[in-house]
Image (cartoon, rainbow, N blue to C red; front, side):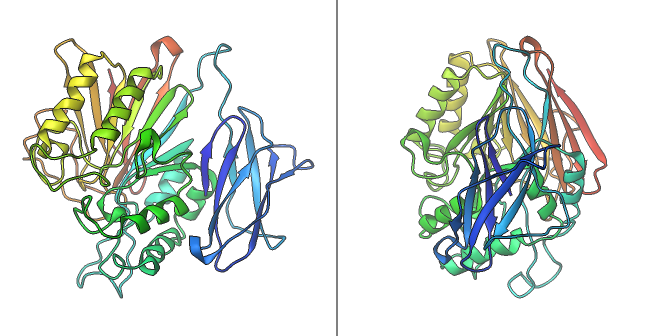
Length: 404
């Protein structure tokens, strides 16, 4: 899997079936005669036989092909393995246009451990459709796996669930040639609706770090998966909506004081055109149902007040969880506008909730079929635009919207 991309280095995630030596060979597109090698690393059972390989002899704004070598032998795959480096555009040109996919809720069936009855997951072809759209990167918005009763209480079960999900054949070409970043929600953190009391969160944190290649975790003195990265002129804030979450209530903590303090400071400091805040549950929906942030009303209001108080521009929440998709829009008293793009579900069962009283919903934007959001950022630096196209499992267009 292609992980974090920067100008001077790119991270590639690899998993083997047993302890083996792995290495990366990579070359500039169109220049196969000259190649470079990463350091060789031995995988181990302690990390689910996963490791990260770093391509550190790259230059900005280029495309590369790569091979994975296991015990010195090239792994032959029936699909392309590629990565890109981000461009050095600052002070030189307008930032490059780019596209990315946002999605959540990936349930992969395993009949021995699923609930009896109709399978909960399906339409894995959605990953083929995403791959065909050729996005620059993808942001996974939580519930990226679904831990079951058989998994919650053991490292063996948790690591099995990740490995089983990653083994879906339709998913692998997408992993290999698009850069991937992730946050978690309840089902990849622990049991359904789990909060800070979950007894196995240290193990699921280990597994998350082993299976995803985000550039950082625990920023701002936090303990979970909180992090950030840039893609061209946009900054992505990767939020942890589980580690500090109290049992629900108007005055309960959701992100917690340390994480909120970091987020507001980082938003104030950021010069990004768009500031995408990536988190599992809906933020701008004012329907206090299920696990929406509206249930934690005091903390939610404090965050929104801070964004308004400091006049932070270009805020877009990217959210999942709900098994339906919709776009919410909020305008402050000062005229600032921010959005919540909810994209759910990729392969889990879906249900629309048209009667849910979200007063910030853009009319007509809700639907309840398996889908993903293809998001484009384009235009000159002083007039960047962002547009969203929701697509179904076959790649057909469901809904389009341009953020004003």
